[in-house]
Each structure stands twice: as C-alpha cells, then as structure tokens.
Image: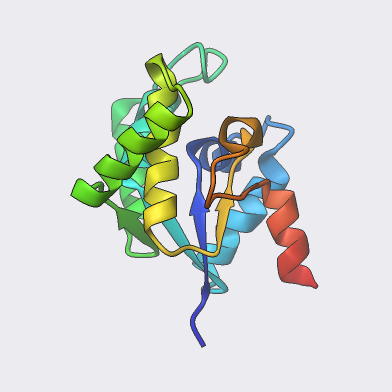
Length: 156
C-alpha cells in the first residue's frame, strides 16, 4: 500500500521549526510523520527557496534569523535528505498556474500561492496542508487543510 502523500505549504514547514509559534506543535508532529515514514512528504522547489528567505529574515524570525550556513544545513538535512518528494514546475504546471491566475484574477505576490496550487492540482497528492487556507479556498481541484485537520484524519 502506498503512503499517503501530503503536500506542505511553506508556512507549515516554518512553524514546524519555530518553537515559539502557536502552530509549532501540530506542524512539527505532521513533519515528524514524514521522518517516521508514516506519510510521504511532498514540497515544491519554491518551498525550499521560501524557507531560506524566511529563516534568514530578521523581521520574520523576530530578530533571531538563522545564518545562511545554518539554513543551508537545515535544508540539506531535512528537505534534501530524500525524505521529501520535491516537485519542479514544468510546462503543464506553468500552463495550469497561468490558467488559475486568470480565472481567479490573481495579481502581484499571490502568484506564488497560485503556482503552488497549480503544482498540487497537476500532481497527485492526497492532502495539501497550509495555515493560509483562505488563500486556496474555492480553487477547483484543491482542498486546503490545516495540519490539525490532517492529523485528525490520520489518527482515526
């Protein structure tokens, strides 16, 4: 039987590493399921770049950013270790992203959420986890769920 595939949005990954976050516990628990081989973690190449940007940003990290060396080590040990399946955009996902952008009147930085939606829709995953569920609501073919929602489903 194939493992359940869970696509992680960047915010869930960041909260899994930020022990001061209210969302840390459930995000870390879901991430740990990847390392316990209970689920297949799926991320986009975009997530890796966003992790780097956020963890090195003093404002985002409450004036306790990681150094470039620390973030590089974290990314290599966790996300490039082979535990996660990494998705890269191709022509089909780019076309889907642009279709979604037009259909949902996407402007400016929202294109990055739409790009993730395009990847998730064109790639078979079981769940898409994010704390920004409102950013993905009403996108046909996509059901955003919080880590709490997925942990509840997995524990039943």
